[in-house]
Length: 75
Image (cartoon, rainbow, N blue to C red):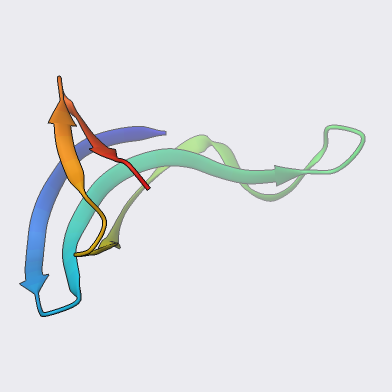
């Protein structure tokens, strides 16, 4: 899989939760082979481009801190 871009689509905060929704732009070869290695669905030579929305939710009561380039949740 190749991820070409990630965009922030929405950030929401309320009394209990923090959430961020991102749109992920990616491409991959999407096919299925059977137990004998025969392609039964899709095309192993065709790259399919797609996007997905992913939402990450954190309870505001859980402490978080940045450690280098990563967000660390302690609970």
